[in-house]
Image 1: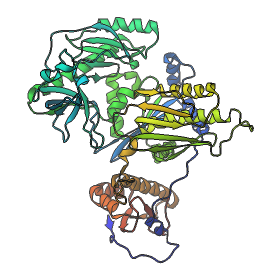
Image 2 (image 1 turned 30 degrees about the horizontal axis):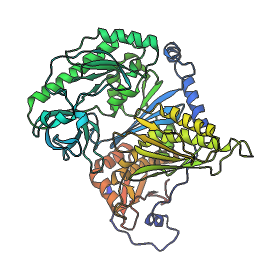
Image 3 (image 1 turned 45 degrees about the vertical axis):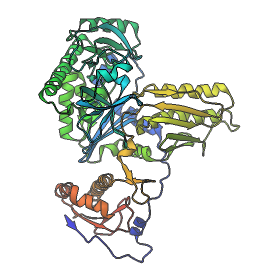
Image 4 (image 1 turned 30 degrees about the vertical axis):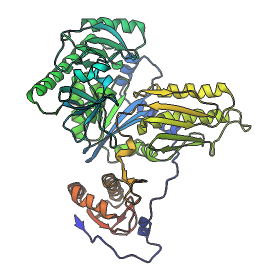
Length: 582
């Protein structure tokens, strides 16, 4: 790879396209994506499935009008992205970066560092930079979860690590400073706060959740069919569990035969045996168990019978997913396909355009209105605007209700996509009639019902304000893309060098594909202009990735940097013609 000088002489020509790099990027206008077109293309893909897959769907699906659902997995050098499409519309989005730690769900052996009676909490040394936060309530056996019906008890003699019976007042004597304790992270470190933990350890499987220190067995209340619950109770009573352990049947277990639960339990007990062996092998604070990567979690939690197709654009990830799914559900293995087209998989299915809206302040609504999302330290504020709303009634009757219902649907979707948590305030357009406010409240509750995070939604006030709280276990999606802005010492934010490097590589690959189609066998030379911080990332940390692009595609790549360029801006130019490639 050829590197040019870091600094270039400032050009006086106002027509120089590189002059735009000296200014902050302009805020993009909301992109209006036709959901009707997305649904139409998804239905066409559903019809193209092999005949045996469509027959299997009719046999095993309870809903004849079931939406066509796809999982799209994009694997890159620095991050893996998973998108869930429902009728072609992005419904869920997750990112795993190679540099990130998978903290939520991890189990640690630690030691009580100190007790804070005022906070009613303990701080536990788990061998991490920050001590874990452990509330007194989480040091006692968990009370019955309202989302689980307890079927039977499997209590036994106390084991090492099991929570001791007692109450809050007994905590200092039960867990004095220096005592050994086993905890599981329920909320990752956010900002300056250490991870939040619990002693109520749980190991999730495909159909079961194993609770090694809880002697109660139950069924998720989300399974509502009475006959099905009776059948699952018989299966649950027939499972052989070590004394003192408990299990919960997950929603994914609905309709499954007994052998699925036996196999799942065997895998979970095997995993727990490894945790115990590691626990006994050391006296130091250490990590005993860590959740699988995004591919493993996708196979376990998302690849259910409701998913019609899975596309993976990486051979190694495709093989890993097939092997993982084969151990869990052999029938689902046939749904996994390797995507080997030249066009990026997220562009092929219009996912990239939809993801762009995740980081925009303004999100358009189908009929012309928009919602504006502002995230602050204390809360998330959402404002609903009519804008150029195209209501069917010129006199305004039903116009406001239609806009607010569209906003309710989109807010629920954006909350999931952005992984927003804490207090969320939604300022709907004022509605005079209580029945209209109730209709909007009912709609947003229905849309949020599919959200796995715990949430609480209050009715709309007379001022048109709705208050919502949502539990968040990890950083919001936007936090992995942006870092504190060097221009304003933390008052704003700009994209990190890693994020810009990923975007530059995507732009280069897209440009190579376009030029190869236009020029056939003609040599290709691309020149990229960017800020020195991003230049350093590409030429040092990601140098091997850039060289791999050059070798794989037979192209020449050069980079030039200038302090005058804005840190988020870059341009890729055709080295032969000097024209920008967008």
